[in-house]
Image (cartoon, rainbow over all chains, first blue to last red; front, side, top):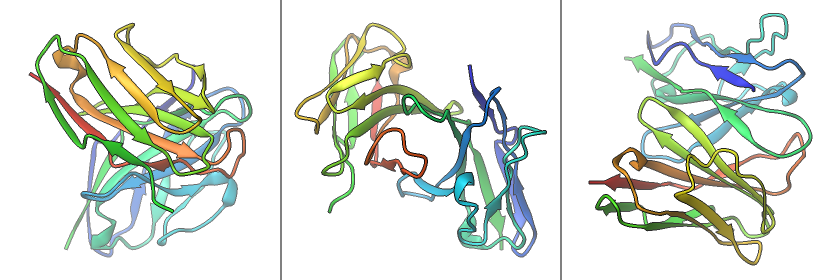
Length: 110
Length: 116
């Protein structure tokens, strides 16, 4: 069965410092990968998906099939980036079950 | 239109009682999902609906949990004989069509369930 691992429960960085939220997955094929974000007192929402190769709010994530990773990166953290971040995986085709990681809380220190 | 809505927003119940949680998806969204968010456990998939059918119920933790969807719209998650370990935030999400790489799941605000 597929699995998503986010090894850090909490990541604290200073404002302006680079951020890397780690995500590793286990799946033998080519999955679809996503990052979701939940700001304080807001709903969980999609941040970005690997298939779109997009940069959202300065965040990027590259799928590394060799390392089975999909780390989320931002060169300069902002206070408003403080939130809970979830990495998620979906198997292409078939049904739509999405497997989420346990989440990483990002705390940006002013 | 409006986003995904869930009711109630909070529910406190006594161990052994039954509870019903409701989800109103975005109008026109054919796919609907239920997740459970427990402290330290991340997001746990419960069940997925495509229209009124549930092709994947594999995430339901026990036979005390059931869900239905009527009219391809509203869904109800029922937990019978609640236990303290059922305490969590129950999230609902909907998407426009199952199977497309670019579809996005839109989440509701969740129902926070506390079983005393």
